[in-house]
Image (cartoon, rainbow, N blue to C red; front, side, top):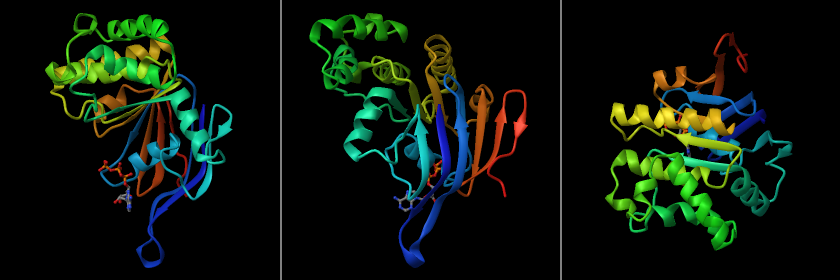
Length: 234
Ligand SMILES: Nc1ncnc2c1ncn2[C@@H]1O[C@H](COP(=O)(O)OP(=O)(O)OP(=O)(O)O)[C@@H](O)[C@H]1O
């Protein structure tokens, strides 16, 4: 569970001070698929960075599976993130000159998984995203959709509890984007990973269990599949 309690994040100082998150409260249950939606500049990425410990808000608590990540020392936050979370970005960020195998193996190497144990995990992750026939191909020789599949394989190989996706289909044509969406939801359902997607895409958001609408750094509404709640609006 991710429990965001009274989180406030400001950038700059004094007259340049800008409130990017303003007393944000929300709860994301384990295994949910969640869309964070809102206009450009509303604070979506700031919220995702706060929930993943990539960024530190000045106030509040972010309790992830029982630990307030704002109370952990930076090194502990890094270890916590590596153990529990993975990320997928619009720009893929795969290593172009490395093979698919090596791209997916990297997080396991960082986690000090032995070479022998890495192999079945890497092959299983590549199979899960439909890239089993590209094991030895270099990432630069893949199509855009295949690069995003590769990024997803790399993100799931460590079996994270939470998968953050920042505009995962933003660089893809609609057919390829739809296939990536289906893959993400299939992984969410099959492995129970909590899926948190930052998106401008209303259709994608509507497919999630929960839609969190951000406006001017505040939670404007939390829509569940079958009910609409308002939270954080004063
Ligand atoms: N490092 C920073 N310094 C100052 N202001 C920042 C910084 N990062 C973000 N902001 C401001 O905080 C606000 C929220 O930014 P954020 O990136 O979270 O928006 P967003 O909703 O993700 O936007 P987009 O959809 O365009 O990616 C914006 O007004 C932005 O200008």
